[in-house]
Image 1 (spheres, rainbow, N blue to C red):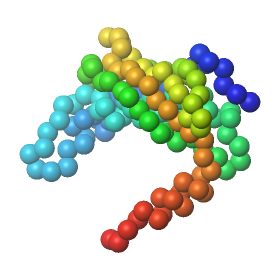
Image 2 (cartoon, one colour):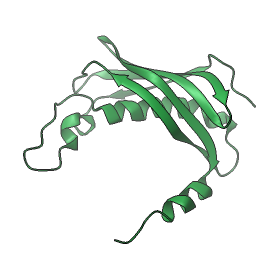
Image 3 (cartoon, one colour):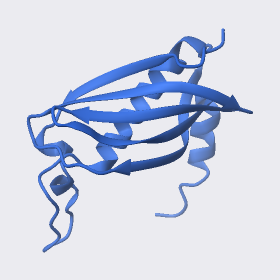
Image 4 (cartoon, rainbow, N blue to C red):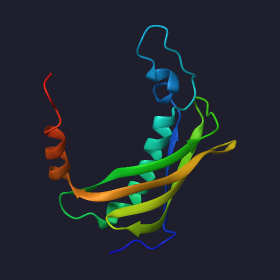
Length: 135
């Protein structure tokens, strides 16, 4: 099975306190706004693109993010609904490319391009284990 260009998928979330930039503060004095964090928005973009690849996955396979070029240009408050979309735009070798964008009730909050690859789950986990290093 192959993806058809312009095939799309969407995911939704309601912004919660743990999804805000403020939740990323780790050190004393570190402060960020109580709005949707960019990493959370990008994660939703990855989820939407991954949903499109789900039917292509064989036994023991999963899709992984490989490249992103994303802009986040509007803040979204706690409690707001965010809809994130991915549209398949083509394939380059092992990479599946997607146009991605997120919207809240005020309009588009971010957009860009994202690429994913299909890999064996055991392969990527084994590679990751070699990078553990010394504690």
